[in-house]
Amino acid sequence: MVLELVVLATLAGALGIALGYFIAALLLPDVAATIRGLYGADVAGTLQIRPAWWLSGMPMALGGALLAAASALWRLARMPVLASAGGRAWALASRRTQNLQAAAALVLLAAAGVLAVTGGGLAAGFALLACLLLGAALALPSCLAAILRLGEGQAHSAMAQWFWADTRQQLPGLGLALMALLSPWPRMSAFPPWSPASA
Image: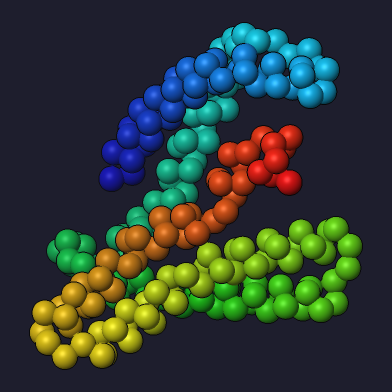
């Protein structure tokens, strides 16, 4: 499974670098014209591909894929061989990780509260923002699990109970993706620093 993951991450990383170069080459003339018009800085309107991009992009793709899969691979290694095909076994194996995430979220949110009361200055503001964002992202799976358990408890028909239970069973596999969607950093980084939307 690790070898399959490395192969897929290598292909995806190479494709991402190629597509990134293509998109950057298309956008660079407009970005250069904008910077030249706003700041008077002379920026080259052409892009050259460099070996350093490949040497830095591929380790990021491989490292990110292995880091994202590390938790699932660790749980898989500790599960019985035949149990890994069942969703219920995955849900039970991920309960400890979810508890650790919830504890880390409480610590980060408490730190954000302390910084909000006692902190002052730019560094404390950034630390508060980081604690708040990371704490909210880590608390999301536990909050969703609690909402799904509440819905399952309120359901009366067998079909409704099955829906809530099956949705809660899918949560361990979707938790990381949901936390990534919750993060505002990709949306914030989509705006250049000189655009009105970033002000």
